[in-house]
Image 1 (cartoon, rainbow, N blue to C red):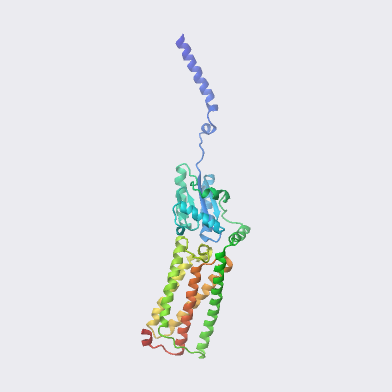
Image 2 (tube, rainbow, N blue to C red):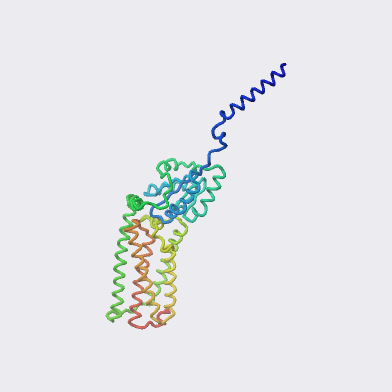
Length: 365
């Protein structure tokens, strides 16, 4: 009898456990579902950065649509020097030197992505890897504790409203910066000087053609062309490196080179301005070498046309820095000064070529 009672008791207990089981299990266990993993990331960006807008408008929206709530990207706009310093602090905590960071700067897990090319190429794979591993939080960095609450909570839409696009640059301009004011003063002086030199060059060539002025340039004046061209080539090569590698420029005590180099105006038809400058200075050196070996006035005329176009283009770029981008790049201003000096030398040589033939012996000295 005792064995029968024990069997009956066990059966009753099993029945009670089975009956109470569904109610006792958590809701997630009842439905067979588990919380979805979420990937958290953080991106610093600037309104004047064309690479940033490409990421915000072309790279992130499709990813956000694909992953939905499983992808949470916090955006922090760099609208002041304080914002830039905070980004540099985050970069330093991740082991990056100050000169090794640029925008867009995206932090995901323990990884960081710099530049639109790297974000576009590597972010999708990182999202998949972190989702497969159960998601990832933002890295526990001291600087992020004060940054994230003030950041934007969502990704910008693929097509920003006109009002938002028009109001955004004001946030960048509103940041008071003593360095930017000094840079604007220097750039304005250079801009006015370029306009005057371009006008004087055109007038000097016209007077030389009319026979009203004559010049006999010294042979050593020809050496100024390669010296200035190599100097300008070095500046242009550095700017090309900054623009193509999304690196942070060394600006010095005046101006804000990084704001200029990260703006949408740093490219013409998709080609970085620095690369255009490199090609221009190399072409000037090639024409100079041709002029040294030819008695024709044609290469000298080409030098004038090329340097004149270079000065006109520099006037346009300097105008953009002062009145559109509202930031000055001293590397760009230096290149503008070099190109202006090249124009003066070229015009002086052209006036001499127009008034008398250049002996080849003199050129060879």
